[in-house]
Length: 301
Image 1 (cartoon, helix red, strand yellow):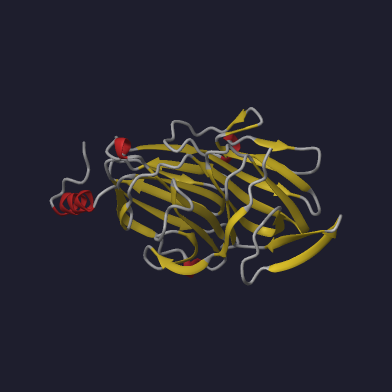
Image 2: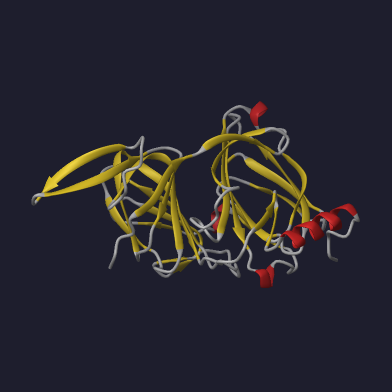
């Protein structure tokens, strides 16, 4: 067994998206090799309706899949094919844009005005970029949760963990998407396929990931054990931890415990041509998508 060391460690950055939604960009719109097959991730967390209620009006997608996971509040959605619905607390939507879709997402706060969720974009391989769009909307109660003896809980949004399978299926990246809570002081190891890209995103509490690197700005502690010095990184809220190769990830929860997403998937390793919510393999394909939008041929019926 080999523990994955940390390849990079970074904090999210504030940005505006949609019609002026204030959110935190975890990663995206840059070098995709670190997180391939995942392209972008946003953390939309806010207690002020004025900062998110303008939402994400009608916009196109082609060549990718979007994964929306809601923790608080709700997201009303609709698309150009006539689909509509609402994602409530704990629910997830996996949308395969494929050949093209126009949709909108309008967040609504809970009774206290709080809204919290994540959106992750996964790339599609060239062979699937022009497939028919489809949705998988999963209610929160249909997502299995494992409660373990050490007090940890693992919510299996997508993929398989210890023989328990999440409800989303048929995804090109064959991902694993876990929502994990580890109590204060507990040390825990999670299996991750050696050939997958993997990252963790901490959104509550703090934790240490074993054998981590020591980037600038991260608290470093030296521990002397059998004349060896081990460096550890202590990462808190809104921290992205990208792992190097190995077949397991080990986490040590901090004094306040930790909650994080652990996401992995099979790298696609294809060229990426990017134009906002449209991701293809070549610039010519991007230009064709723009032409399709202008000539009302974007939606393939």
